[in-house]
Amino acid sequence: MLASMPLRLAEDRPPIPPVDLILRVAPSFDPEHVEANREAFDLYGLSHLEYFERALAGVGRGFGDFERLLDFGCGCGRFVRHFGSLASEVEIHGTDIDAEMIQWCRDNIPFGRFEVAPHTPPLPYPDHHFDLVINHSVFSHLDERMQDLWLTELQRITRPEALLLLTVEGLSSWNRLGTAYNYERGEYQGWRAELESRGIVFINQDILIGSTHPDFYHSTIHAPWYVMEHWTRWFDLVAYLPDGSISQDLIVLRRRADGAPAPRTIARRDAAGAAPDPAAPQTPVQAHLDELERLLQPLPPPQSAIGRAKRRLLRFELTQQRQVNEHLAFLLRSLAPMSSQRDEAVDRELAMTRAGLYEQANRVSLLAKQLREEIAGERRGD
Image (cartoon, rainbow, N blue to C red; front, side):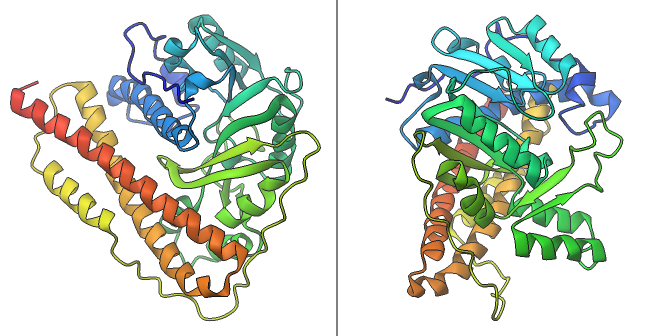
């Protein structure tokens, strides 16, 4: 059954959180743009839920098909605020380590149930309690030991056949990091060596030093093969969607029945041999992205603050889609020559890369629809 949720900015949705709480979960912004960025925060949460809804639709489910939902790392309600229309059918829960943000959620989101999470398990929930867990940007900040603790805990509190939507920083984030740091710098080369050998690298010398977050909360990059090999100790991997949650990779997992054996570990591919040509070939999506850029270029700036926020989000999304197109095309080109070996890991990565390309095409179609609506609004003088 596919019971989708009406994803829209409801008039009666809870208030936007205060700026000091938003700054704990979002990049800093110029004081003169406070209101525009609060509105962007509002839209950003809804945009993520649209990506999550599409991921669920890929397995024939919708938010309304579940009995009890947990937003793991809910912060100040970026996602939960938009679940009002769902609350009559689904029990909504949120948990976070920040007690002040949880208190704000309790005071302002009447349809949710919120609990402060400890820094390490257990959570204050019984076994087999949830049939859906969503999360954005928690595992992208924990080292491997902490991740394993929380994957074990999520397995405990989810019931058999439950779905989990979790995000990590993947290849796009790694390439953005390489742009921010000189690719030839020694520290970057060290991170790269660790990522290539272990599939995960935890970077504790980052912009989160001195933030409101605990000392263990920094930056983690995952290689897709690491998730496929390591996380399947706890869950079955349903899908791995590169940049499936805007700027992070989205992973769809299914909780196995108690006592069910884990699938056979996917062997790591030997990295020896000549490196593939880094030049990414053109894909059909690239032409669509070029056309969207051409249409967007002559549009005058919107007059309203919310219109400007939407325009910034649209431009950001176009940039992200261009990057993920390059990465997916590169992966497909790199893996294709190996397919004749009939290696299980290669076949699986090829299939998921192709699935990612199809998913990206759907996202570009959505962008085109948004841009067409904006152009029509400009012509009407909205």
